[in-house]
Image (cartoon, rainbow, N blue to C red; front, top):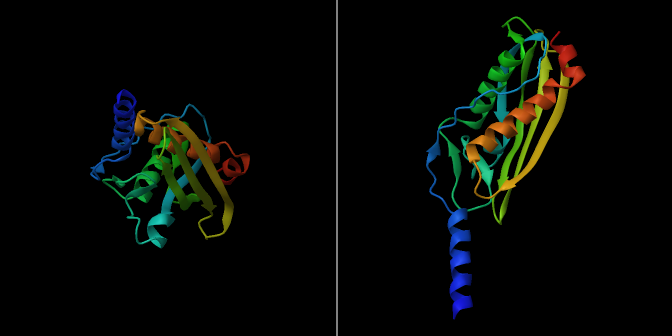
Amino acid sequence: MKFTSLAFLVVAVFVTGCTRPAPEHSINYAPSSTMIVNGTAFIGDFVYNPGQRDPEIALNQVENTASGAFKFDRNVDKVFEAAVFNESRLVGIDIDPDANVISGEINRFFVDDLGFDVDWTLNVRYVVSEPGGTQCYNRIMIVERNTPKFGNVFGTLNEIIKANIEMAFSDPNFVQCIN
């Protein structure tokens, strides 16, 4: 009987951790890169592909495996565009509407939150285009992380986004296209 009660308690805690209401969360991305990148660019549009191709995924929803939806108060593409803009300014990239344009596609923003830990995946295609439209840069950056189940979700979101942007900013070909 004692084992059954303990097992029930463990299952209840586990299931409760996986289920959450589906309120829209306000995310205030805080740029925090310590990189220094010289260049000039303009931040264009990023498209959130999961929300475009799957009617089950809202444009403001991060894909996840647990019950309940993880939604932002703004569309994922707008959150990401603001993050790229803020990180660009922080690392030293001058923002100029007449410069090459950084844009792209968020191919996957996925949280596997079933189980005892959380697997995060952010897959983004970065494109740098010259004012005439010719592409100078086109690469996919993928960040994958594993975190404890009951960690700081918004801190982790910030870190995943920052790490993905820093992957692009640290690519010499990217930097060459914004110089």
